[in-house]
Image (cartoon, rainbow, N blue to C red; front, side):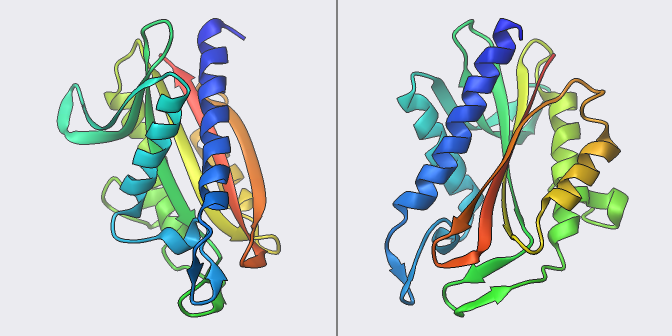
Length: 210
């Protein structure tokens, strides 16, 4: 693996470990249940999690920024940009997807989310018309991030062992032909929700250079 690939694998490893740490550190009780990441969801929670993950990268020596305008289209912003040891940058979009999860406030498992596939596949699957899907984030990075820099996506998912996200995520990877397009995948990694072990937190990291 070339040096840039090793550096990006290290970035991915830090981010995957950091998501697990953020989940483990959220130990306050919400309606009598351990919070975990699920219990920390508030307005604009993706921005909050992106900022926390940028802080974790900074603790490992990376210079980081959040909500950075893309050079060729400043009204669109990237969640996290990290500078690597060789001076290049990694433009990282942080995405979440909710297939199944345990609600602390309602003390029950949600098994069906009508927006789940839309947030993965976007308009090609009858989904969102805006730029909010995982598929559209891959396209946005390839179009807007500087050619000489690395592009990456961190997907934080919520599912159940009986209904894994891998089915849809693997399908998306095939549809977008990510391997053929030069994207490298780290993960998926899964661990149980401490408040309800039938549910899980799961993470993927993809990166691409140039």
